[in-house]
Length: 244
Image (cartoon, rainbow, N blue to C red; front, side, top):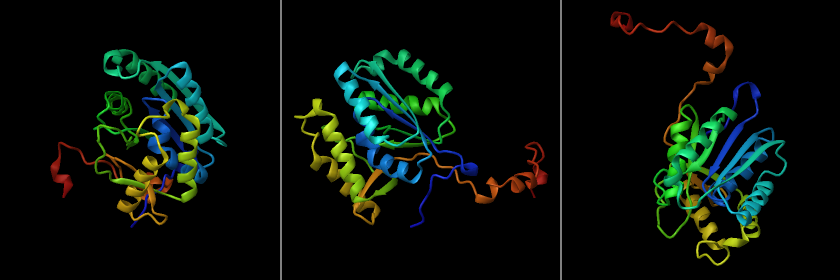
């Protein structure tokens, strides 16, 4: 199958924005992909934003970001303290946070929550992602939970065994406040990776999956300066005869 690559114009650093409603969402949803991507693109810059926390959870979130972003030269980690499970009821404050973020970063790729996620905080962050960033590649990740909202993703990132092992170990070692929850276990996280690996025929049997709603195809020739200079003038919309 023909694969896609995160290429940037003229070798500029890849700009990544990660958005998570809660303190472990980014790590669970796209941690393996980030580990692989940052190996392949060590020049990348990362903005990492979490919208809900308590003092204990904030400490864990900072530790998780440090592990997953180890070696990244330019990283910006922001942990907000909006009230967990109440995002739709403090929507204006969170919307203001998104507007500030839009002025701070112009990402090449955004990792955020699945639009059909049944947790209200997750769905709200996904909605604001699309409201705020309108000319960007957005990949929506999935979070295992009691509600059972796994869907049919259409974008897969194959992972090597070492990426899976590091992802799961980092999560279990960092977010100790979540021990005891039924979903918080190595077998749950590995099961999701294996299932998506089967669906994508991943070479090492594991993958993370995303929902990609819009992709723009840009021919390689269009990125060259000469090609841009030679392109024809646009056809006037009020003169259909010139379309022939």
